[in-house]
Image (tube, rainbow, N blue to C red; front, side):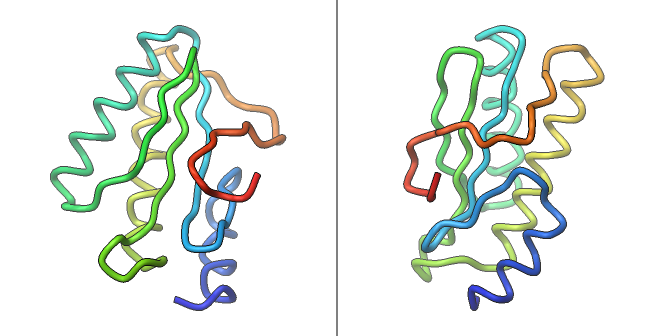
Length: 114
């Protein structure tokens, strides 16, 4: 996928950043266990989809980085999985576990530009 195509896709995903060969976002939670629940739920979705993100679990934060390893770059599947991550996050938000982030980026340290 070209950088231009990736930028066009990213317009639909506020808070996600474009790295060299990946997209990434930091999600914030009320508790550490809420972050673990998010990571577990997203992991289950990823297994169903057959497309697995890199996740970094920190204190009340989870960083998600998506890249298609088989092509060593971005594909449409990465943006589909980004949408799945947003759906899981919104579901947890309705339960009161997730906190909406300010527009600034949270450093997550998984290779995407920060």
